[in-house]
Length: 239
Length: 239
DNA sequence: AAGCGTCTGTACGCCATCGAACAGAGCTAT
DNA sequence: ATAGCTCTGTTCGATGGCGTACAGACGCTT
Image 1 (cartoon, each protein chain N blue to C red):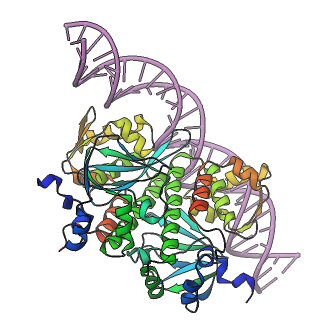
Image 2: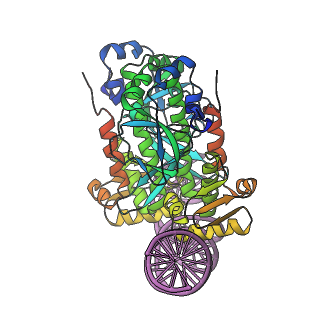
Image 3: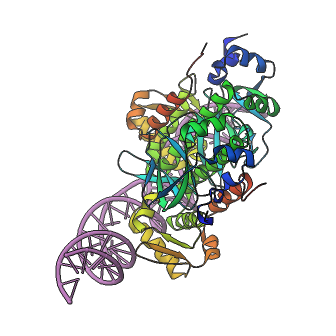
């Protein structure tokens, strides 16, 4: 098996004890996602959870008038579809692929059974859920108090942390949807970052040149989320 | 026992099966909170969970520069201190009393044991957590897209739903802290609502006169949260 | 009843973001 | 190489919320 499709590239799966992993191993289905694929709709039923390996997934809230805002981003540190084991079955947000890649799918029944055991899997899923809540709440206050410039930095850094390379495939239009601002606002903010030699981009490809510079320019929100994720989540293989 | 101090005034406690309730009943400690009391600090350790009866609690995120924003409000439909059973032990937000009243306290050990059982209590707590996440995410998008006027309506309605009377004890200054806006912004928005005969207030006492009118004036965010809470949470005594 | 502190009302200039409209630049397909 | 589409850059007026400053109103205390 090639390293790049190893389920244990997902941090949650990686930190499961052997016996627990063995139990679900056969049920894990490799799936490939491309940019824009929808894992589940807002209000739609959820049939499985997904453990991203190289894919990155955005949770987007939507408004009746077409407005939107990303409320969290999930990569190989976590899992998509928590509403299944939380008991709600659906959520009021859409899960959409922000960066193409692969993930492992686990069907509704299997993940629920596993969660109900109350073992390491439950423990991991709950801690991840709390990390996700931190991201959501920090997004809320960031939306309230910080400039588009700062939020773009936060967004780039959060995405970068979940990516193997330093290049994002993402148009300014899409970033604007994520941040819930106008496309022109992103153009302007991105222009500033480019002038400052922090990023370089062209037609949907953004390359982060100076990561440290982005962090300096960013609001505190990124650091809050990062610190809390590091605290709550396993960062590599246990055992 | 007077009706007003019955633990079963809390919807979660009320919908526990008899045997599960009996097990924790003796450990429930009645506590009285006044406006501004802090249940736990941002980043501080949490020693107990609280089931509000008449009290209302705000979850507030804070910024280094003093900025703040309410990310959720919890009344007798829920519980404060989820980080305990989620495994994180602390959260990055402050829980502060927004409306004076009583609550029942359950110590760390008891609630954890109860949660670990995997029975009805776990089930209820998880569903409540998901309802709370809905509130958080809707707050995030509301902060991004809606006016102070609309947000004030949302805030009033969410508070009202958790209150026995139609009078809130709350200065405009405090509301401003919750919404993360200037006090003057609240004065202006509240002035409009008063002129429209939807509310009446004076020196820290707000009376809602026309609830329906508030709903009409509000953004969709209130309805989204309300609908999801109704779906996920028990609304009265089970058995 | 006088005094003081708290709460609310109002005004003004400033700035970030919005909305709309359009120009240019770079792929890609035929 | 030409046409057409997507993506990015720029402009301009409008506007909502911010920061600051101050004035009036209410109510508690002495």
